[in-house]
View 1 (cartoon, rainbow, N blue to C red):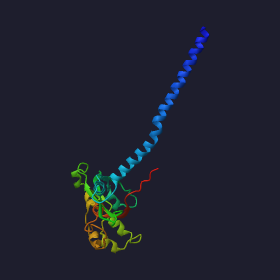
View 2 (spheres, rainbow, N blue to C red):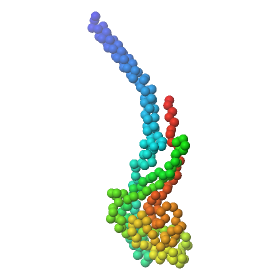
View 3 (cartoon, helix red, strand yellow):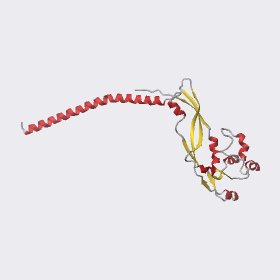
View 4 (cartoon, rainbow, N blue to C red):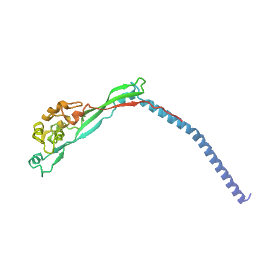
Length: 238
């Protein structure tokens, strides 16, 4: 065999081996890929079913207990606007701009509780209400801030003022007092305080916690909304 024929023979054999190797790779890949697709579909549906079964709401289940009392608490920072030049404003109200300084943040935890939970007879629907509970944050609320004081806008007095014309009558001052600004405790503005004006309209207050006024006080334990939801889900597999 001449050298040219031998070289041609070697190249031809190498080409055959490459073709055989390529076909073997295709065959092996097909053996893995073809059954992998239906198996992946089966595995996906099984995992989805297991997850939905684990979180499915039903009476006395672990998921229902977590749903009733979720381990999540919202944290809210409140700031008040302290008017630092109230005396100058009262002395010369026309030309004196209002100077305001933010108070330090007062941090509260807000816990949402589900109340009045009622299941339907077939356990397919659930109705419930939601209420909010405010508590001072155990580490972020500075205990010494409970003694903070300042001059804050009396929202109750401002709301009462809207019932009168541009120049209020003497009746307004008889009810709301002559002082436009009051030096008060800052935290009480949130957690509840009373005033002569509040005591006068107290019987007209609606909603929870009507013995005082204050944003956190009035909202604490308040009922937000009523809900009705359908539990469960039908799983379709293809």
